[in-house]
Length: 480
Ligand code: HEM
Image 1 (cartoon, rainbow, N blue to C red):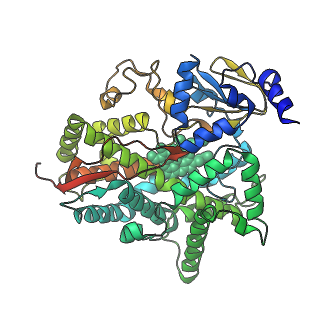
Image 2 (image 1 turned 90 degrees about the vertical axis):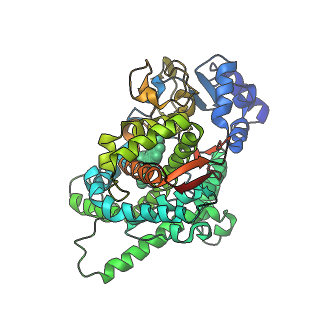
Image 3 (image 1 turned 120 degrees about the horizontal axis):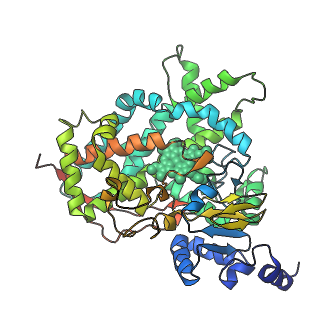
């Protein structure tokens, strides 16, 4: 269709023509691409929601975003919507996996096999042997910085990626050992950034994906986009080699082995197809990508925010130090039951600064009701998480960091903040995340007194927050 005709159609006759939007966004995806490229798409939406006095926006010819807490349940809460074109097919060129698979039935199959690896029972057994020693290594690495400052954004990245390597692959990824020199440091956020931008124009992404599968054409694809699957594939292969050498594997309980056991359990059952080799590679990639970076961001933001709010910091120090006698006695299970203020701080951090601030796109192939609107079939749509988590109808003083709102009823609608998502595609790793967040925060606060260094810290987002350096000063604790 000639460009002018296409524009006229999109402006006046398109099924979404009645929804408010800037005129440029009606005609082409370039408007959307520009704001995604800047990394401040949610902030631009905030301005547009206000400008048009609306809670729904058409941000590209075929895309709607909502700023109404009800849309959290009305979109991702549904089991009959698909991953959108602009959703998680962004980890470079990962094989199909639980987080990027489109079909809801296939997705259920994968979740069923994977779920036991993420259960609290599996994790409680692993925390003292696998997680605690890595966190202790983090503490000693921070101790080495005394008298100077520490870039927590990178230190957390190394620690959480090492944890997911040990939990999933039974491997030492060696990030904390090498810190700034580790070749995987910063790879994932950069790949996400590249992929998210490429995805804004689906034709570009599809062409790159196609080229990536053609022998002889792979050189046309930006190299970083293959780095994450390559890293995961390498560790999957290394794990297999170790497996072959091991005579008795019965003791192993890493997540990959639990997925493999699930594969065996359902083998031969009617309607069940085992996860094949490529799917296992896909899941390995999901574990590497999902497991480290997001927790690192939540920790970085928590430390930053408590550093900026001394009364919150002091209350947290009192709670944690009064609960544990020693650093060794820290456990996330104790923290979960005895440290309500820590949970309030973490919840408030993930509300005001969500790790995944964007809309987590979905697509519907039939018309559905969303927050009082009827969305036509074939639309890409999403709930704007950053904006909803700060919605004035749901939270008083929505832009203020106030952990107390999670401790007593202040009239807030706390359900309007859903850092781990809603519905069938909610975060499979949330138990791991909570375990790491509680364990690491307790040890950081138990061992050190902290002073802020970086101020005015704000990250752009490329699906997840794109962490910049965040420095603080740690000194061995003086008070009890
Ligand atoms: C603070 C840390 C974390 C946050 C805030 C977070 C948040 C989220 C959110 C919001 C989703 C839903 C996406 C959607 O609706 O489309 C999600 C999905 C997912 N998360 Fe997490 N996550 C965290 C940690 C983890 C960890 C530690 C893992 C472990 C490997 C993980 C693995 C996954 C996977 C595999 C999915 C896709 C699930 C599916 O589509 O069925 N996440 N996460």
